[in-house]
Amino acid sequence: MNLERIPNEEKLSLCRRYYLGGFAFLPFLWLVNVLWFFREAFLKPTYTEQPQIKSYVKKSAVGLTVWVAVLTTWITIFQHFRAQWGEVGDYLSFTIPLGTA
Image 1 (cartoon, one colour):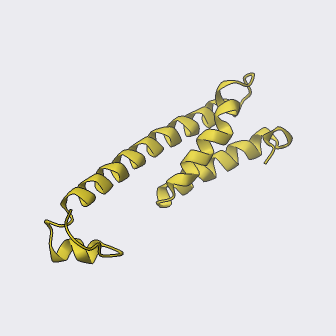
Image 2 (cartoon, helix red, strand yellow):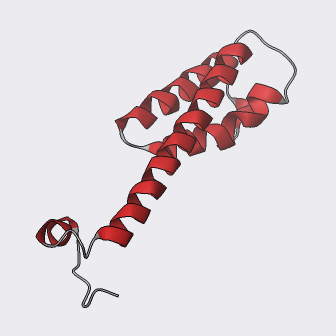
Image 3 (cartoon, rainbow, N blue to C red):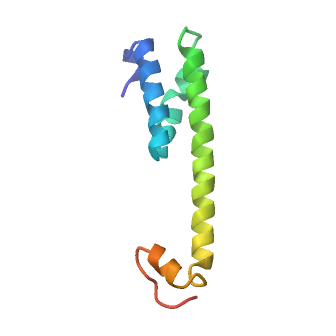
């Protein structure tokens, strides 16, 4: 999508939608929001909607960072302790690996 062709009001609306969509367990939208709107928020000359876009981009970056940290922590804990959890670990597994090592 070419953001150059979109009016500033629509940019703000789109940025807000992606920000709010990230709360529906779709952190990919926060990543898209940061990548698409970073230039609009921080590098373009000032316009009236820019402070709000900048706020949504910053909040999206924070949300994405928190989501990645939580997901990485869970994956690490699960892979390390799955075998020790016995049946619970097996129920949480999509596929049950053979062995414990």
